[in-house]
Image 1 (cartoon, rainbow, N blue to C red):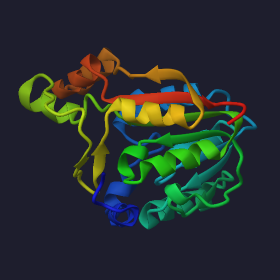
Image 2: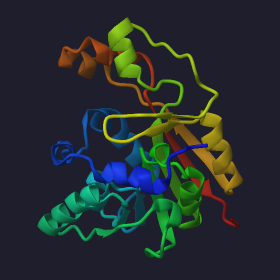
Image 3: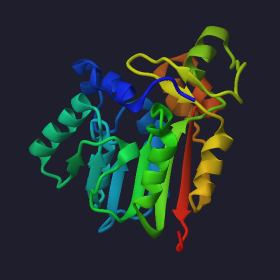
Image 4: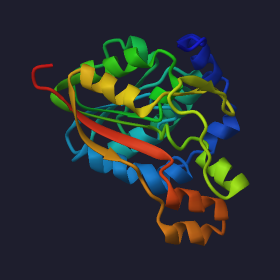
Length: 246
């Protein structure tokens, strides 16, 4: 059980420095560009004409990719600084994305139900993650698609550990604990914790994706530590459908 409240976590993300937020480009960052985005979009399925909730939309890079694909997008983000960046870019680009400031664990009316909900690298940062996951599932139409991604619980801090030791080391997995990061904390939870909660919410898992970095891309960077992304999966992407009767 986390000792940090959702409001404290949101305050930490709201204090994220502007230069860190603006460092994101149209594909997010290196891992999102080369490991995650293509898989997330593939697992969501066709975008054109579909109504999609970007749950925990951050500065909006994924919302913009979804809108580029023809989706009708609503982005929900509680952190003020991240939301402001997303709204400013929407004013410039006029993609038709509607952003709502809200705690995902207490999701208000934002246009439910949706054809699909995507929650990318968000649940691992929410103390009350069960309520957030339930909100995502409940926002779906019966049969709707839920895709979420997290840092792979078995391979957290993969890059740093590989860089320092030349291989991966793990000494805690089954416990749940806080992991302080640069701007705000993430939380380690075993994979079974997420999957069993998803099943209990009336969802059928359709795919687990453990993305692997293309060896040629790793080699081209000249960064030996990126071999870790070739050998082991730093991220996990889960696709599930809400039961028709849920």
